[in-house]
Length: 362
Image (cartoon, rainbow, N blue to C red; front, side, top):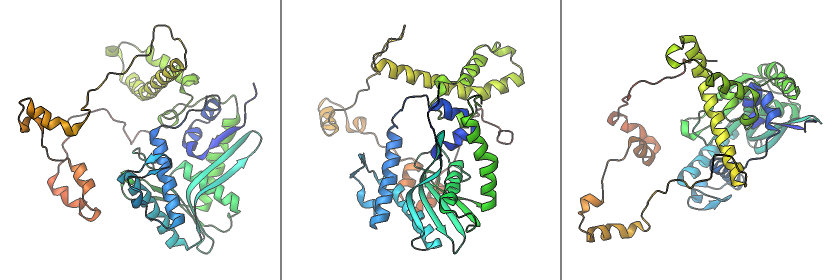
């Protein structure tokens, strides 16, 4: 069966570079609309772009609906943090050197297309510098040494024929959930080496139907093809046929612990897929759709206190008061006063848990 043109998106490059076969398998999966978090992130990006181009204050959009999303104070603050990064890049490289939400095609052939839309791209031939910046609104930590940003940078050099005009490349991650912006620096030669030794081989392997999946935490976590991946099925089989727990050797335990996260992701993917199939009318033997457990809540909270007092309860029983958490206090305080609560807090571990040995993990 002929494979349609592969779309090697920059935003998914960390996955298909780690496991090139995932690009081919994912192309066989039906389109799935992004969830609420993705839609919110898209709206925040759009608001930042709109405010940059119109010289507007994103904080004034709090409580308003933008791109179908109600803008909270946090949403507006994220857009503002992104704006400040754009202004900083503009200050460094000069007016007219910065573009936002710019599509950067790396390649488009009959067999595949590769590229994506960079949040921010700054180019200064005078300073011989290229800056690529990306806003991340999620909580999962994203390293500035990013395959996605490197692909944008290579595409920018390719589109502008800038290989001889740029010496230094900076990759910025703007992620308000994790504090200050992170910057990764590399030379143009280092970027070109990455292109030839990492990017191009990954593309070639993605196009090779004989290339087998290479499962890993980074490759499998967000892969849409979990349910049809032969490597995932093999991992499940390995776990399912493992010896009795008490008979496991330390080596077997290490192997199984490494595979568990991927198995759990696979199981979740199968459950989600089954739910979608049944919602579309499919019949799966032994299973049915059932409503989630209903949680009771007050219909009109403003009427609750007087009603409960009228039933004989005391005010201290009805309304509970407690001190806000350090995280809430930090959010309420202005930026220059957040650190002042450090002397009032402590971090106490509740015990021990299993964690990856970062010194040994790849």
